[in-house]
Length: 409
Image 1 (spheres, rainbow, N blue to C red):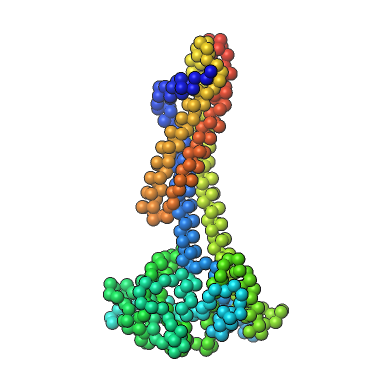
Image 2 (cartoon, rainbow, N blue to C red):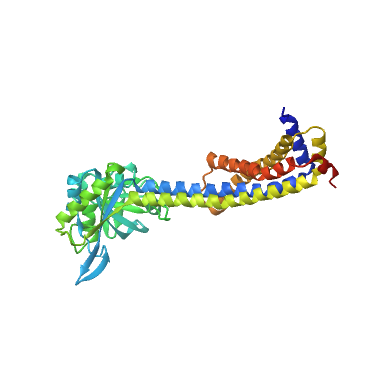
């Protein structure tokens, strides 16, 4: 009967006798596991940051913009002549299937002033549904009313950055700011969203009613036009249907024939988001695979050292076999030694990897996400490496002839 307890004890004693060799043998596994933990933490952190940025943009979105215009047969570039109108937005909301919300939008950079403070930012003209479409929430004050757009009221909703730059710690609600030379009353303050994945400050903006923007702030050679129409579908399942209906509606309203180019373009942000998430996931796996190569190298190191150990301990193996040890006992002892070297190295590597990941976050500002899955994966792979690369030395040791082993010098 296999005396596993005694075999395990002998394996641990053997490793303790050669402490320095055992430590150096485990070094490859330590480096490999710590590299895997750090790489997966960075990759997962980047994935979560991108997912958070995507969520802050809104979900199930379609962005409709003016397409390239032509002048004398020359293509002028996207958005060179606005072709979308407020009436287009109303038609889409009334006729397109699967649409939850629609909002026209136009924006320009403007100088804001309040007292002796000034700030340059993006001024967006829109309607209240835009805030729901793009996941903006009002922290204090109120949003736009239908009357605000109907009467072109001079009211504004501002982001946290604008509030800080113009008002400091003072509550901005009901204060007067000037957009260019036009006075506006601040009626709402948005909740902070932070920076986007591209590094853009999502709180550095101000919103005013779209009709106010068109008539009193922006000025345009094409009255009634907007630079973009934002559409939120009821769900991802009906996004395609909504896009088809919007295309048909705009073609009909703009009198575009079958063989003519559209004077608008529709961007499906859901497809873009899925592509970005898929790419990030692939990069995370690639980083983990690259780090995993060092684990393979560590396993090869274990195999080499164990082969050397078999040669050095040939007489010991012969003595054990002579007093009754079976080939399976010898094989299991060497496998246990290899497994312990790998697992101890793996556990040390996990702690170093976690520390290294936090160090990268502290020094380089990288987003990290250490998951239980990545730790278990690293330890499991480490155990597999120990058994896999330790099997051949163990098998070779178990095949030794006791008489030849006892004669070995």
